Length: 129
Length: 224
Image 1 (cartoon, rainbow over the protein chains, first blue to last red):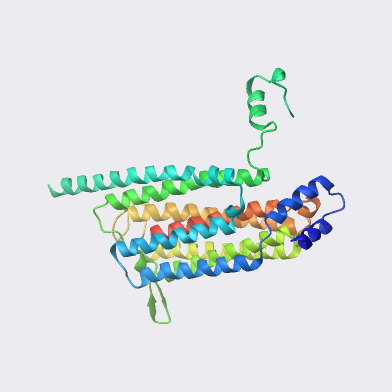
Image 2: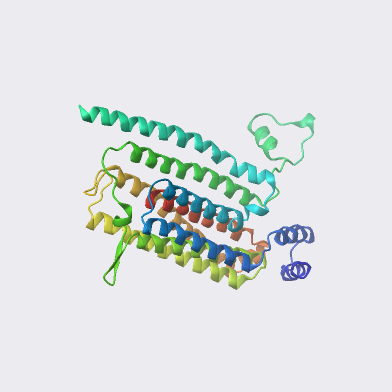
């Protein structure tokens, strides 16, 4: 890491203020990860996408289908956010500010599911007459 | 910029001073924090679309078209279900991989590799939009799918499909333009003169989000 840090400083343009360079260098070092890590995540995303596709290809149905689809979806989304979007290396304040608010959407989804079910039953009752 | 308690400004100038002066909440470049907040709002928009789709799909009494068959392709006499969507997924994941590496080379200030990987990312994005245009044409012209109805089943299929994939496609198109502009600036040495490559990471965040949304659309719209 120390060598890489040195490279970054050396590559910095002449007019770069030392304080800024130092601050940026520290930041850059914090976001330096080996290319291998990204290639691994890339391969994993391919594999889990293939798994999702297989769920449909083999026509799995019912609870098993839903469990597998959701599990693969969450795994893929987690890899993208954590590694590709660097969320794993951000400070907790930023993680909380971005990741907690979407949880409120679960309430919307729950309410709309109840509403959809109610509308469906109402339509069945209405169309049966 | 620091304000003593005795000189607190009133009115709107005071509001901006209170919210900005010496009170940085997130120790990241401002562009990155703003992009994250934009993506948070975009998350709400896409979730609202997917939730409305769930609602109309649950409440319709008509059978929903079988997406595995609607999006099937026949290659060399073999009928493969959902093939087009599988290819589109792979293209988008690959573009996310190249973008992640572009960001990595950006932090190493490797001007040429960063620009090259970003152009590859934009090209893959363009490829994705092209396949989406093909998919839309197939559905509109061959299958007769319209936002208000279709011969395959529930009328809500068309409106949900065009709204969700259309909005996502617009994001991809916008991303291709955004990435091309940033990549051209990388190549011209703009960020070397500026002294920071953080714009590359901010553009990367946007692009990964587009991929992230596709993960959810793939699961809920195509696999349900």
